[in-house]
Amino acid sequence: MIEWIDIIWSDLASQFFNPKKRLFLGYLLSASVIATAWLCLIKRHSIGSAISTFFDRKIWLSRSSRQDLASFLINRVIFFWLRPVLVTQLAIATLIFELLHQQSMIPLGLFEGAGYWTVAVSFTLFFFLFDDFTRFVVHFALHRIPALWDFHKFHHSAETLTPLTVTRTHPVEGLIFTARSALVQGVTIAGFVFLFGNQVDLLTIFGVNIFVVTFHGLGSNLRHSHIAIRYPQAVERLLMSPAQHQLHHSQSEKHYDRNFGVALSVWDRMFGSFHHSVSETLSFGIGKETAGFTGSIWSMYWLPVRSLARRITRALFANTRQVASAIPRFRARNY
Image (cartoon, rainbow, N blue to C red):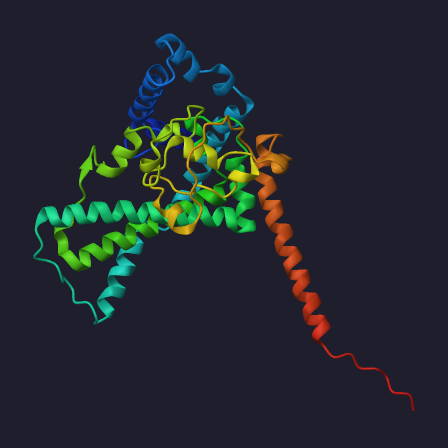
């Protein structure tokens, strides 16, 4: 028991001390500095006013923020128990590599003679773009498929945003994104090793993809915050600003299903869900669908499961009625 507690505690600590994690203290510190600088230089706050605005107790100690913390802790425990049964990127990479070996259209080591920097830059850039695109696709599906939206509402039920809100996800959604991550890494590694050989390498800082470090270091944690930093419109057409993601969390129906992108906004432009940031004050949450998500933390975990069970039950009964109606009815003849 003590060993399990120690492992779980180490996992919790790694969320803040591992630069591969979104909540790494270095990224949180950079977000705080950027927010303070923006409030001072753009909004003309004094340093004291900027700090008190960023660390507003009404935001950080709200009921919604306390729910964020509770779900963060609960999810870490849940995934500690699920970790042994999750498929890893190594298993997927091995499978994809073997499948590539079976085909004859593309030869093994087609670009094996390419230079180190060509391979490293290509691998790092492709991995970042593929990862960001698949995040967009999954996020799009979580909103557009009703059964998945039932689970994603868990995240959108937040009525105040803090960096910890990013961890406010139902475990089912967490499993979907974990599978996505393993698939992206497995496919990318297998594909590049097959084409370029063993010289594949990743450009990193602190052992992390250089593009990921840049994204987080430049304030990704402000996306879930009350600091609405907007980029020039030309920049927002390429990169997702914190204010654009905050618009994604808006209760206003005119902002529904907008800005699904993570780092890049180009995917939203391609699929018609793009929206520039706005200067108006936004209210966050899920509006009329909030019922049930304002109670205990346990009801937030249970309600999406119950909703999915009801959807499945209704679908089964509907199919049963269709089958029954298709069966010919024989009437007894009168002799």
